[in-house]
Length: 191
Image (cartoon, rainbow, N blue to C red):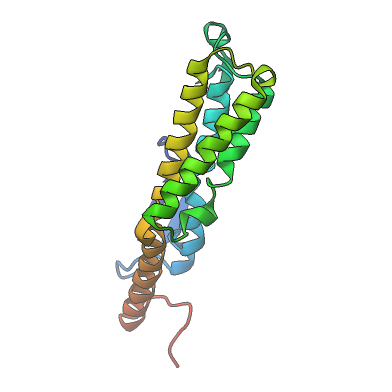
């Protein structure tokens, strides 16, 4: 039986595809399934929001696949240096390593507050270089940095992503064993 496999990205755009054949109505071989730990981990990308925030701080909007400077936002925008520094500060906790970490609620709150305070200190010390024109921008940056950092650090709380990865691996192993018993494909045939 031939089936068409179509892969799509988060926006629903086709990113690949192809035919595969499987017999007896069994699932395709594990080598063709893209649900292993590495593929799942690759899809967890908390760093992507940092680039969005950096561009927004620059007064840009994402239009038709690219970041476009909006003239009406330039009186509120940070300079390249300011946006870069703030983004780099958040990047330290917006990583795959953090996504699979195990942090307590207290550790999360302390870390998020510390990073937001550092952002405030950086903005006060470098206000001219960053293009800071008012106290309201300081509050805005604080809230933005704290919220993004807090939420990013909350994601792995209770080892949710780690458990999901381990559950997926266990499920694959069980399906592979089941297919092997039914005469399906196995990468590691029983001897």
